[in-house]
Image 1 (cartoon, rainbow, N blue to C red):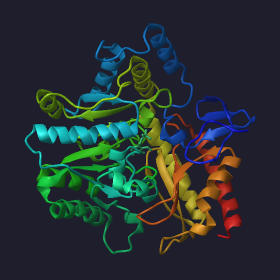
Image 2 (image 1 turned 45 degrees about the horizontal axis):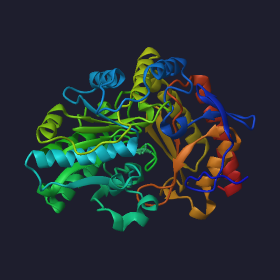
Image 3 (image 1 turned 180 degrees about the vertical axis):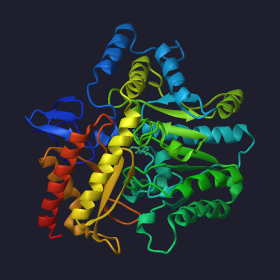
Image 4 (image 1 turned 90 degrees about the vertical axis):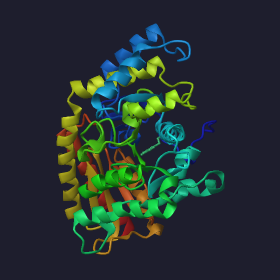
Length: 441
Ligand code: PLP
């Protein structure tokens, strides 16, 4: 059958029939367990009846009313609901429709704030390698992932990168604490190298996503990063597109370390698969400065539309009603223990990591050296297919610490139960055995 549709590759999957809770049914008669919440999106599960009811009610009133012509209550209420959950003063919300748009907004807002605040020499946004901040050209300039950025190099101004804190690959004698500081000091070094009066911001994922496989830094890293930003008057942008809205067991992952960023990007679990929705959450004082100086010269047509905001608000209400933050912490512990069991059984698992229900494991050919599996084995592609054949959906990318590597994210919806985690782990165990047989591991 020919199709007029195309995405990144020629790969085609079964047509979806329906989705409910942690399951998706294909028209091929198979039921799949959503082990990755799609792309870490369907955080409160599929087809939540209360969210659908809120959307239907909104549809009966107005699906779209352009923000230059009308205010709308769902947008106002959703902004207030977010502000209530954020640290003091981080309470101004700028809506967009996705994660890349949220990061673009942060970059452009930061720059406009600097100009308005008389700091026009500042324009560089330092980020990490590897990292993923989105697919638009501005967000790509921050992204540290060659296969997605290389072709576009001449089309944007690449921003300076420091190594992501891939401590699990280090074979030094440092304590975790000192390793965290070592990686944080790289930011200080880069700021000095670039000229501190040219540096506008530092952007990071507090818990890594697909680029690093749920990378978590030692505790010492986070506080030191904030200190270094403060020392040089540099803004801290937290990309919580994947880690935010509860996925790690706190509303924002940066709460685990008591970090107050200046700007935050959210999406994915914010619309939770019901609508495309994202936001930049900004410091109140910075917003006043930009608005006083003539306004924020940036925006997208669908931003803050009432239908998307009604769904976003219902998602937040459901997270509270079902106590999904505490479920995420509890189920995250169960999942993490299960992944460590898998590591004990399969010696080609080199590392298990993550926070809450943003977890991952990484395959290696040698646990002592952490050497990756040979690329020719195509272990990554094979494993995804082996899991899919066993009705488990996974989501991953092949990269780590600047070199090739195979890691797999395990991120079921936050409504997941212990027996469902057991099912996911059993399929992973079986799939790892098949992979070992097929690849001679
Ligand atoms: N930032 C992070 C950390 C992400 O994980 C993603 C998407 O995976 C993005 C930004 C881009 O979001 P979107 O695909 O919605 O544009």
